[in-house]
Length: 532
View 1 (cartoon, rainbow, N blue to C red):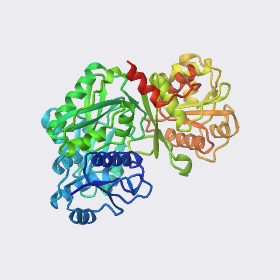
View 2 (view 1 turned 90 degrees about the horizontal axis):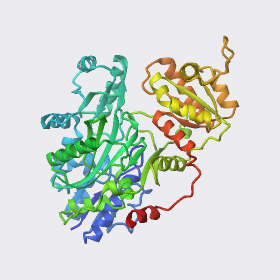
View 3 (view 1 turned 90 degrees about the vertical axis):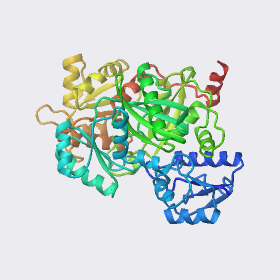
View 4 (view 1 turned 60 degrees about the vertical axis):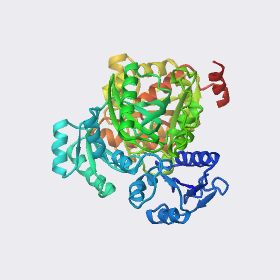
């Protein structure tokens, strides 16, 4: 009778080839197990719409009516909704209510995880920690909640992909603006406001479960602190810097959530941790965009295993020991800011990347620099200028050792006034002072000091790297001048780093000259693991 697999639909930010890889892996496993495979997808760019990938291909829109028509025509045994991203996932409830058999996790449980109100209630009932939260019923209530827990707060719509309309509000004016945007995107679905926790580490938990029992899992950590969307984050797998107790808590929480939602198939949970204090951010009962990355890194296809579980076949876990892997893989995002005139090239809770690459290395820093190079990042040459513009003392202190290393390596350091003064006063490090530009036409030098405009310096001197870290600031002058510096760097093809953790790791790689390497094939890394 066949199994219908719903594809990813049109490519857009947040839904790309990662989900198509999942759909194709699912179809190939179905055919291997003797099922008739039926694909519904309408994107000619995908592999899943190749005529020889499935037994039957429907090049049709993924609307409720069309899927029901095809389900009825094919008299299919069931539908897989968990390998194509958010579009098929959102169809799970309407399809189930129309009498369609959903393979894997039930539609009711999928909606319990997607509905932020129900999911947060469930976590509270289970005694699992999460940031303080409240469901929006009026803007006044949301403002009262924010005043109670303290700003910043995060506005989060339900049933959305890639953090659409998700925003961090630093004051009441921002909160009111963002609530209106989120309500428009979420339509009739709940909008939740949560306390936004600064300085936390974000952790990805990707797994496959069968009837609520986890078969295999992988734990990856974000290099950036929580607050950068997982699709834009630099992800390190296996995680390198997590406490044993943190890992234990994550496994305990994930096991409890998997059991409570009776998960069968792929799922992803995002956690945040400060020290050993672990909290749940969200759970997606579908393949995440990191599942292909996890499968390639661990050399085991998680979707093949999930497909067997969803079809009721014997699903034997892979023999994976995360502690015994002798290499590290780092996933880095790719952006299209050069093609988007006026877009602010900075990272936040709403996804902006249009692709990603992953590279293997003997250690995390080596894998990181190779992944950066693979995205097209240009390494600055010693002797060139590096412009530093860092908004807060906290981030200046974190970058201080890296700044001293850059100076040692022979780079000419320059910076905006606050950054220059901080490094001179605290580390006796001399930087050439540049004036902050007010707008894109501000090329004039400072009247008092004669310092040239940062804009002029980027355009006319030998600047090869700009480190602009404005995260966490709400000062309007920092936001506007920071935007001008970032946008000018992108427009002139100059390497730009906007996250302090990434900037520190880049300098570590420069210090070790890891950009000079002999490329190895992925097979060499897999063999390294097998030979042990």
